[in-house]
Image 1 (cartoon, rainbow, N blue to C red):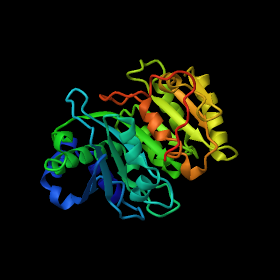
Image 2: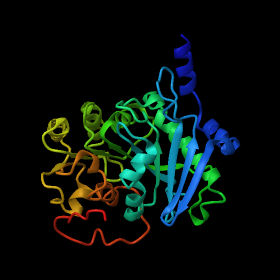
Image 3: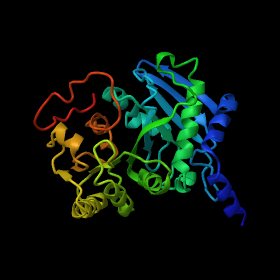
Amino acid sequence: MLRRTFLSGLAAVSLAAIARRALADEGSRLRSVSTEAIGTTFSFSLDNAPFPSPGGAYTDDSVLVFVPSHFRYHREEGVPLLVHFHGHNTTAERAIAQHELHQQLADSKQNALLIVPSLATMAADSACGKLELPGGLSRLLSEAVATTAQAGRGTLGASMFPHDATRGTVCLSAHSGGFHAAACCLRGGGVDVRETYLFDALYAEQDVFRDWTVAARRASMLHRHKLISYFTPGGATESLNTMLRAEIEHAGVPCALESQEGSLSRHELSHVQAVFVRTELGHSNVTWENNALRDCLFASALPRHLRSTWFRRTGSRPLEPRQ
């Protein structure tokens, strides 16, 4: 009874109340801030972080937010967001560094913030705590955006944005065991996620990714749901990706298979609604070594206001390993 009461109360929390709390408690929420040439990273302790959660075994409530130096707020766009879910036996901080998430977002020049919540830390566990609750992603993002706006007033300079800024386009990214958090957010997160990128991460719940992709099969490019899923050969992710692609194609959604990484064109990566990429990279390197996340972002629906030569080349896209 107490658990049901707690969950009902949590689901009823208004987003406006979340923003007001963020304004009032900025000092106690900000753990650290670091600035480098490509952007500023905030580490927060947030109420709507995945953990701690009722019955959960983890207590780390940290959420990392990266604001690229090139980010500029446009009221009509709101604050676009890329949310990344790390895998097993790591932390948010380690995943950001290992997969060069900051650098790939900065290189893509997309006008978006990166949010990386702590999931099960240093554990072989895909649990995602409060993100499993209805509206969990919406509450997390509302609190993260409002808290970052407040903390960034004296730090972000031209990249700052107002505390009442609306949420813009949202894309999800998941590596390995982060698939469960992504699935929970697509199933009941309370956010109309536009795109999802899986980096050797389809270990289960393919029905969630199928239903989410198919649900917008008749929508325009501005409103469709786009899936890009990387997989390594010979393992569980390959067989599940094969099954998922067949189901999505059967539902009438345009799909593309890149059987050799780098063989699709930039136009195909940008326009096909469901893309499946077979990569020969090791499991831990899929997200970053060939700039996979950067290319997903280049081809994404996120806004971009800086020029890039990425779209000017024709033919298959050459792989550009990170240096």
